[in-house]
Image 1: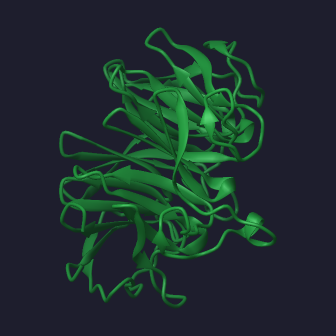
Image 2 (image 1 turned 180 degrees about the vertical axis):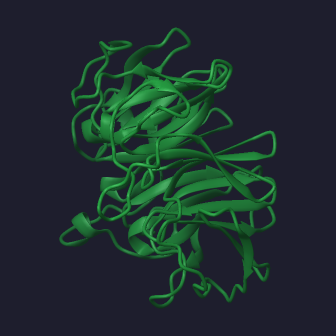
Length: 337
């Protein structure tokens, strides 16, 4: 934990920041930085979905490069204009790209604002719509026949199927190798565990596949669940009541008693420790050996994280995208630290 925090800014600069316990002082202006909601590492290159700038970036050897998205036409605040346009990587326009995963000869991106999954074909240098039609709805099927409502988290299983957190529909959907989308679990807002038919979610977001288990941030229910063998089980998160039911709460301890507030990103290290971007609590939490602890938490107005969202564990480094501060942080650590 005494290693330094690194920040990757929009300009591609890489600099060290002294870490003290769970916070770090802000030393640079990050107003135009990337809101990294989705992160994936492929062959030593970090790819990220940037919801604020409506773009997809890649980071190689500390340099930030635009992979896809139109960022030159901006509104009065300086934010790139949203839209919906397939075409070349350079011409493509997104609304709110949230997650990114490897897919065929490129990447699949959940374009939350356009209620669609977009396919970045790197071989052809083009962006296509893989599923969805730009309008919110709820329908299984293929291609333009499919409807989502604000899809966010994505994860790829061992069989190549892509799991989708269909946030607005309170469902976990799955897309097979032929592009057909079906509902895995949920579809009505609620808070229930059990079989895939019985389970109910509230605004699920972050997903992570590890060792045959799909982990999901059931954000509106302030908990983390696992989906395996046809069952949805609790990983961590107490059943909340009164104001905490809507706002979440903060408490470390036994997994079934610990409290979260709108958890989003999830990642799992090689030893099975689960890292959670606890957005509402401005914290990074760790679930291991049946206990929840805090790895990082904001301390003061000028410290990170502020609103952590994207999360990725890769070898000995934890990458964190901060949606509010619009900055990408990396935190060196050992497995199961």
